Picture (cartoon, rainbow, N blue to C red):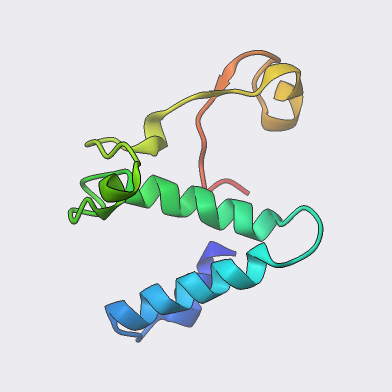
Length: 101
């Protein structure tokens, strides 16, 4: 999905890319059901926006996000008893990643 977004946004100006991604997220969010595309895109945007190296504007901090040199990409999340679905054993940490299939 992210590769497709990158390909579709190629050649656009920064403002056009921002508008494209925002419209894509709104479209995906309005879908019925699981909304997997919207969840993956939200994770990717969070990883990008919370990493001061990737987004030096630190605009996410104005909206309550914690922006750091490593961002969300190095955080871990306890997946509880659902660990098998993600690879680690149950009740262990898993790093959120927008790039995993």
